[in-house]
Image (cartoon, rainbow over all chains, first blue to last red; front, side, top):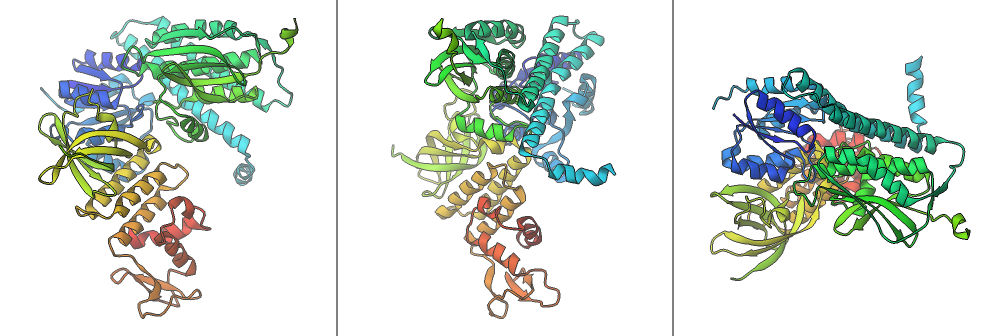
Length: 126
Length: 245
Length: 222
């Protein structure tokens, strides 16, 4: 399974990538929304794991762009962010329904093992 | 009893209290980053996925501690009843010192750190520890931002000093992509928004801490340009004393 | 090839073929435009920066024979970057764009472009509460669509008076006198008049008791 990891922190990105690779996933790592579109073009991801706080664009702007492409409309997205998930359930509902968000994981309280477990539970086999 | 008095206490909060609370929030948000890095690194070492990288842990922890110390120094100087004692400080020697301290962090983030000094000038009147902390704080923020860039020419931070009409400007420049209006808005949003500057992906606490320290020295951070790079600098008065020597 | 220049705000982007996109824009003078943007999926595309959401851009395009023109170039004029920093502001921005897109025929009046631009200005200001922006936008859209509420006379044609209580008839978009238990008073009506008069959300934040007035009036139009 191929994961597109959008992580602007250059030190943390290889740590998350290493954890996911150890679980036998292939990982493409990018730091920005624009690069993520390019990377997805090069190799279609089965899952996107993304930080919401990106420089220049935020995660929602990326998701709007990403979902506007027919071939990426059903790719599950896991938000893995320093932002806590929104308390407003309506917002969460919109994120799930319209942006295909599968889970929102709060980075400081999510181990890499837990992140891998969420990816496993998607049950995608390739 | 405490619950009864709390609303009265909050109603009396001054603008300064709110600003200080917000700065603390900004610093707390920023500290999540290195602490999470250290926690995940330890997890991967425990599970055998990556070897223990003690140098990385030391670099991350050192940066976090520097931020805390800079914040505490700013708080102490801004709330002190005594007037700040300024002394003549050599900008070139201070920038060299700061560059030396930032170098391991820059390497950690794969960012090129350079230093330039335009022209010759004498010392400035500053609080040495505050000026150094401000530049370190700025440096950490710009290095992290530089680390997120995808081309080598953008993964660059420059420590620079130069003369301007008001005095000597000392600051750091990188691919910040920010205008003066953005900085004004960011300063008003610090601690009240997770990402006060759109061009930075984090809380930018280093900038706000540096600005607090600059304020303690009766200066402020300003957007400046150095060649093609945008950055932040503070202008300090040249020392008059040594000119008579 | 004839080329025209206008100002535009992106309403949406959709796929077209392997490397192209269709952009839907609203402009003050060309109405709604649908333009083919060639090759913008490539990272290095020079058009990428000029077609940001929550932006106003200068658009150069070649009109097509049918309803689809071709995008030649764009230049970013203003990017409302504060919107992108806040999740709820971003999502509200998309909601407003969707609402406007649905409301507009192919040749909308220039006021629709101005309305969306003003909405972005408001969203870009963290001091202006989101519920106020949504309410204000909804009322302006009603006005532009020709469905503005009657804030001058009641359902019997009598002038609305300060010491009367009213309820609101959603079907007839007019106030109905209810002296005993009406939910709306003179302050509500004044507030609604200020909103309908096109005062900006920033100005409306200065209205005394705005929070409560907004809370009471919101169910009317949202």
